[in-house]
Amino acid sequence: MDGLRLTLRSEGGEMRLDCLVCSTPFMGKMSLFPLGTAALLFGWSAPVRDSPSFWVGETPARKSTFMYHHIKRLMYTVNIGEPDPKFGNMLLEQFGGANGELAAAMQYSIQGLNCDDPARKDLLMDIGTEELSHLEVIGTLARMHLKPSKKDREAAEADPLIAICGGGGVDLRNSQGNAWTADYLKITGDLGVDLRSNIAAEARAKIVYERLIAFTQDQGSIDALQFLMTREITHMKAFQAALDSLVTDPFAVGNIAPTPGLVDEYFDTSTGEGDEGKNARGPWNEGNDIKIVEAPAFQALEKFIKSS
Image (spheres, rainbow, N blue to C red):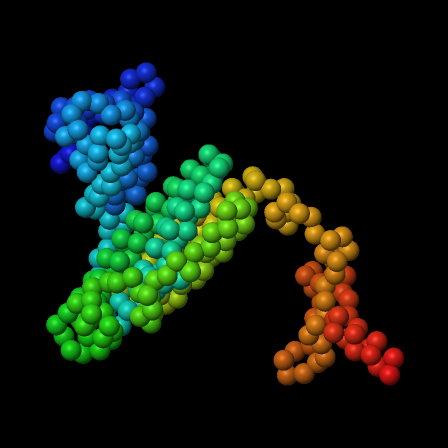
């Protein structure tokens, strides 16, 4: 590997890593988390050997070391024509917004850390890591469009916060200038619930990309957004397949069963006909053991009237 000058070879089912810089070999199981073509995250565990000088940034007491390695190539190469600072501001929604790539990367990765299921933990870590690549792609695209705001007054007016405080660069804020927050993340510790949240998250991101595509005529931007939008569907399919393989009943959530009878009652709480519509019937409130019942509030009112 260029720069690090590392040599990998297999020995007895494990990976042997020779560090040519310090000529200190060590044995350990190695995990590769590919970040597309954008970056690689290497993590390995190994016994401490030889001189403490081997451990860069580590102490002799540490039994493992982790390294983040960035490759200077995007997962998807971004090219644009004429920069559009206003569109660049819109793109920030997918950089630091509620449905953006950082939120997805953090949500899936932290879910993965909490997951006791090795196979589905691998799924969460795979997709969480890919989302970091997407963050780099959307950030690069936004930066290209925002670049004129560094010096041009008219361009800077498209997003004064980015122009003045950020020097025309991207920041962990959404298109309205609101700072990214961990409140965006949906992490419950229940794998089935988390997978459902992830399916919804990918669907929301897909719609945001679709809308962004509609607001630009730049073909390079459209191509990059089309790539990112497509990967959302790929991830939806993976999460759905993982959920389907986990539960046979889509309504089996948690461990405590719902109350029989009550669980099949549909409360008709929006009644009458008018400008806002009329009482509707469909598979959501009839059939499949579901029955419509008068709203509890109306039942109580009727009892009150009868008793008066």
